[in-house]
View (spheres, helix red, strand yellow):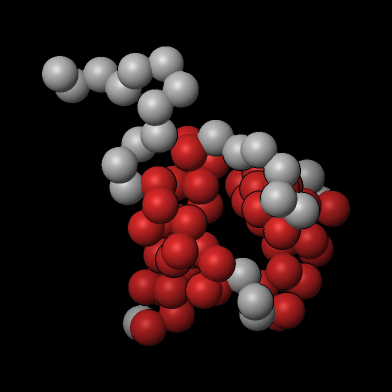
Length: 81
């Protein structure tokens, strides 16, 4: 079956969360996201909100975790160039 059941987590969500947790300890990243979020950058708003929910152990959709992981991965790849 190719459809997630109601309440079923995406199979990649756990590894995405581990990836995110390893990267959100950087205070410069959090400061940059906060600065962009204040300026109404939608990506920064969503990513920072997701980080805050993770840090506060609040419920969060796997969709948000996967999106945040993808954003951080793209950022990491851009920094390598």
